[in-house]
Image (cartoon, rainbow, N blue to C red; front, side, top):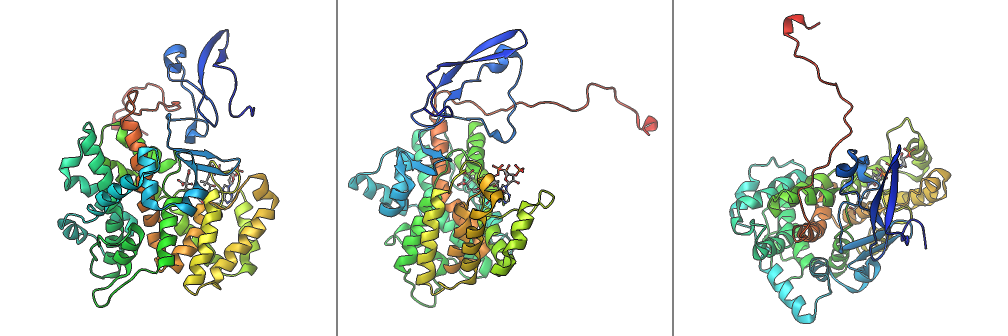
Length: 436
Ligand code: SDX
């Protein structure tokens, strides 16, 4: 049994000076055990210290499991590779929220409910008019998703299971519509309404790329690729943005406001903004001949440059999503006539060199999901600024499932970390006349 995962012990002992305490150890179904520190401060008068939460389990969850050493990702126990191969995004949404794959009847009912909530309140169109046309679409998404709580008062009482369900369905249904509106607004084209006879991904592509002057039919290969990209991004355990949604939700904030907080966090280049940053980095490298210069910079501790799309807090092996993303990338580039895209050449050569370089091998820095997603989305005609919006669209179901799990946990309480204080000790006020 790997010492890092399960141990036979049901308690751990902590000694501080001449005192010692026995701390309960809890065992999950798979993955590392946890030492229960919930009573630690009350028993010892000390806090634990774990900036960045590198060794902290914030909750007990049944939704997603990651094994970073083995490169494993399971949604409710199902491997991401199988869901991406055999399933579709709406089925994955049902699985993440309800915990089981839907029967045919459950799937049809869920699809009907989501489909019939894809329109947004017509006044949202006027809400968009307040943004500058050159606003970053992520800024528009933070604002417009947060504003949903100003439109849907009948689904913000989180104590009511029915309101929680309708808010969840509304979020999953309306994110593609809002994302497409953010894109259309940025390019000065009219908004395109959803169509109920299209599946989720095809509906989204049509809302993004159709124009009133001609008919539009989504390319089936690209729609399948879009759906698979949504599956890959749907959930990922307690990452930064999911933890943000859980913390916001722990105060009882309404789900729309919590999802808006998650979008804001995801925007960061160290997190969901990495796909946009990775494509910009590949474009800056420009040619395979310049790769050594950037590898050197990435390894230089004095240089803040990092290879965007490489490394991960949890995956110390290849990100299983990156492999599927790479395969999807090749399919999309072939379908769109970009199979000789020079950026793909730079990306593949950069990956080859990095995976052989001692620095990256020692630090276990492998390509993550963001490394190939940018090239793929660019080939699908999305502007770079829309990449993280697509990540947020897909991750909304994960945020919703994790938020729902937290709200329905009877032991749930407001999240309120403490600190190690290293500031000034108590001192008296100094009148301005005596300040130097
Ligand atoms: C996502 O958490 C999730 O699950 C996130 C996500 C999800 O689905 O929600 O998977 C989505 O956010 C993927 C990650 C996307 N971010 C990037 O691609 C940005 C580039 N990557 C790095 O910023 C970094 O790897 C992080 C932020 C992803 C992880 O950072 P950690 O775990 O805090 O690790 P670290 O920054 O401490 O790095 C460890 C070492 C450091 O060297 P030392 O200080 O130990 O000497 O590795 C180095 C870093 O300098 N390092 C890199 C590097 N990433 C880490 N060096 C060069 N290039 C990199 N990309």
